[in-house]
Length: 608
Ligand code: ATP
Image (cartoon, rainbow, N blue to C red; front, side, top):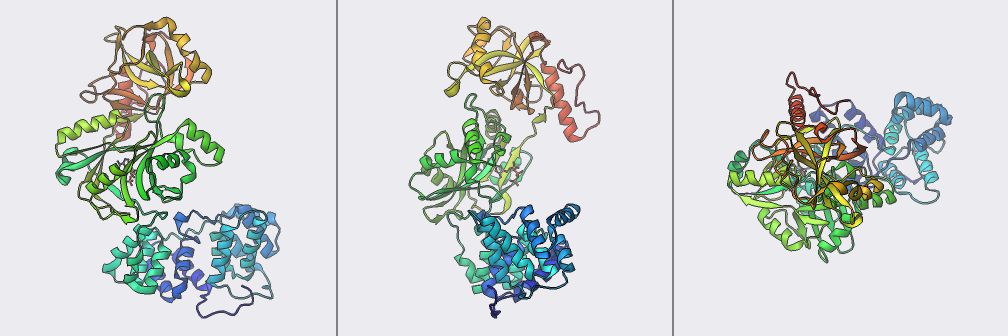
């Protein structure tokens, strides 16, 4: 690059730094748009995609998964190298201000002479260097990155250094939202009325650089070439919310009601040569979910498709969903991911098909897409279809909602049968329905084991889960509130049949009230300390039945054995259903901010 003469289309980086400074000086979206329009107007056509990426603080579109993020330590060395200051001094300045850009700028301003070979920085050179910094890999790559960065600083003005340093560490943070860039692109290359078309191109491609390039080359006509493509995620369609099923059905007429799974939204790009998974934020998450990739290979063989679904961890022992936290920890080393994928495997509940063998299905009605999805996916444990019911009847919808809660889902997603897939848009074509029938559970509770389910797989030969109950002191009966399958060490787990052998009874004990049927029943005697995430309403459990909602009891969600057997307690000393009810109500009040909300109701047996 060095010694090159400046070609006519080589824009100076100073023009960008100038615009960035003005962007930083305002928080008003309209002013930002104006600054961007002024910039875009003077950018040479062949550089516009780079300018857009640089303005976003990156060198590639988000979904490419190539981050700049140079380690701060290395960036500090780069600044030290370019300014001749000791590393320690730059480090302490950085610790004081927290902004490497400001440090680079201040230190460069103190420089008495610029390097002899100094020449003005161009967008092309800055972009190429940054790109290499982002992609360099293998032996010697750290040194190379360091040199590339120091090289740029050598030729940078203090103000340019501010933005280069911030970009290099992945902290550009100009506060320019993607939609502001969309506004600016529309204002530069089209009319206000045509903004939606620009936004649609962005929603379909998730790539503002590509949109800018197409617009700069051919104006609006250029956008026709931007289509859904395998390997490049589209922005997710979003839902509105309504408070009752009646309102929802009034709006949609006959609608498809789907279970609303509580997990992570996944956009799966299934190609013949490979599979990529993207999150709702369009990050590449393929490496985090090897089991979904494997399952998709079997479920969608020999086809090319973009599917959308919700990934949820399922407990192999209880068949129930597990809290998503078990999965969200899955970042980091490959071996950890593989271990966690074995321990807490997730299933993908597919709910949409957006592309099939090169054909864009987003413009087809929901009903067609669902049919295509059903014809395409061969269901396995790892990939299933979202449970759906089509109805216009509020009573049927209500019953289906109960089933969804019973299955451990958080509610329903109602979808218009005729709706197309509107990438990136939130509207009433999809309406979510959740009812806050849950309350956080901050303390441990003590529950009585009244039965057990046989273990499968790794737990064959012992119990997979215990059926747990709270005590109803008035009726002197134990009523169920959860299945407990988590929190047992292997030793305790395999000792369970021995521990319970003297308590086995051939059918439900007379003092046990349950609708579930475990494989074995126990005399209610042993008390276990349990930590749960929240109390929710569930039609399968009998604890405090009908108290909150007709036909439903209280369930402890995501219960986990703390490891403590409460041998010091009789079964009658366990947490009572009234206590659970008080906790539920207290928390509900606390959530609503009502006065007198008792977060810790009096007389709870487990308060210690
Ligand atoms: P939003 O996604 O609407 O911004 P949010 O992140 O708070 O809001 P929720 O209110 O829980 O999420 O609801 C929307 C999410 O529900 C979707 O983004 C998706 O991840 C999830 N989901 C679960 N089941 C379905 C389904 N059957 N169809 C569509 N989305 C579903």
